Image 1: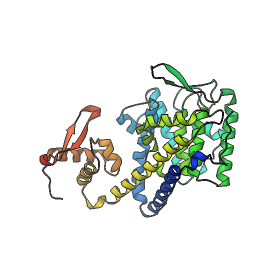
Image 2: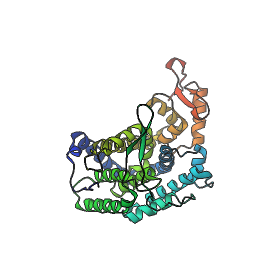
Image 3: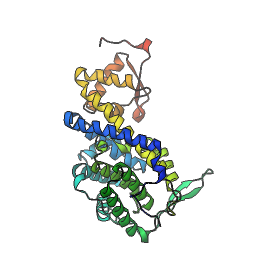
Image 4: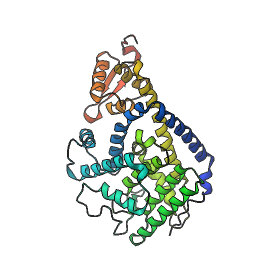
Length: 359
């Protein structure tokens, strides 16, 4: 059985690369606190877009999908969920909203985790919401020949309640001891949660909800304004590779947590860098028209740009206004529309093809 110990730090986690990531994240955390005081309006404008992205991405990682339009409508509760996928999406929406609103009052314990899982599954007809798994599960993958293989065997069902009790109590003790950066403890906790794999279904989504919850409780609020789940989805193969590398030998306490910790710290740092850019974009937007700000996105980012990408960077500009600005830029020859349907995007026109208006 794995020995949960957060009061000591494995030598691999004192690596200079990991230390450097933590230091840079702390610097961004300090800026976050300044923004909370100086520009709360800007941060507030980022929340809704982040919630949509987080709910959509975390579910898509597990193959749970709906259309962008229905996702947006589900987030504002203007429609009822239709089918199993949308029921699970609605559950994630509810738990994420609860975390953002009540994170300071949600103590981490096995019972609380069960309650969050119950709420995650609340809109479905599934009977195992809020219950530990009732059978042993496996993490499977494919070998080089495409054959199914067992990559990892989590804690047996009979041992899960005890493992979860030890996981939570050890984590609480480590937070109280205050020896290490709480962000490091949060990532180690979430990693061990994934290795226990305590539920029949919903383990991945619960791990991401717990990540956001524990980060917010530790003062790392970036997940409220920038979707950590989207960054994980954007790097899904690297995420699974890091999880597989770190879980090898976990049951015998022979594993190396560093690959997973390094990956997650990279995600958090990327989220803070995105936050800095978006705060600067929104805060400085008053000096330019909305069409100019939309065009600026093309100047900053190479390749194809979608409406959703523009909305992420300019969350205070409505999608209708973005569509109007894109049409204007296409008509004026500044950008070119490429693709069609869900694959529609826009690219900056080559310099010789552009007719720029005075700025």
